[in-house]
Image (cartoon, rainbow, N blue to C red; front, side):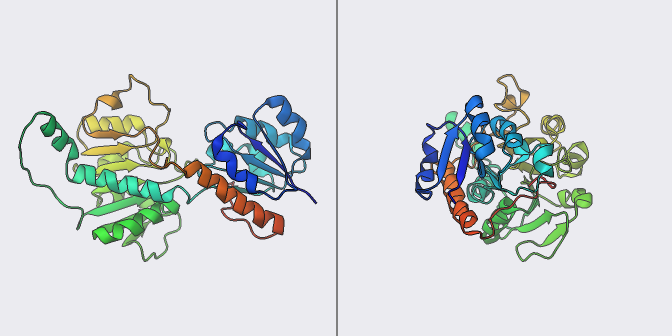
Length: 319
């Protein structure tokens, strides 16, 4: 029986082109017009959130999709695409996690090198035509603490291994992992932070992770520590981070995700010399969005054949 797919997105988005590879008998409707979404929703088998910025059409359409059997979110984060009705529903949800892990891991490493070798000082001296040799501490022998050992955390740990760093991590259920030297439960995060020279936040946003790095955690860190966030902005208490950076409780921060985006032009973060700001583009490679649609097309083939889907989301856990 032909499958009807509804994609909540602008039909003119070029990254949706891989959908053309779906079987010829697939009925594909791509729209973000509310009236069209409402009209087609009762007829669909698959619901795809094809908009990386706005999940509202997806959320509003789901209650009307009375025969939907599978839903997919192109992004890795699903917190904006979860409603009480979706969480309670037995309809499986999948997402694009792990597709974004490699560039995010590389960005974290770049940020570590940026601070370890004091690139800001090099750039200031270059602009001032100033020749000023200075000593630095290499990454080898230092400790990286990873908050959240999901796809991003594992990609980061695998790529950090050649740097000969000590790797610590937090996990809800600590289990031995050949990629890391020690794993701590969330309740002992401060113990991990106290040992870390660099802290990479790569956790999804859930009720348990929101604000998990706050004033107490910054107080536990070394004055020389650098925090890097490539997970979700609200995982870090921004007010506490601002205080820690301004008072030099920690050495620096490299942040790709924020509570509110875009970051307001008047936000005090912009004026901090010890902060590297990225406009949520650490994972934004030229082909990333199209790659995410490619993955959906591959998963669609599994759905059509009745095979187990990849990247099934634990809707109650939020990732």
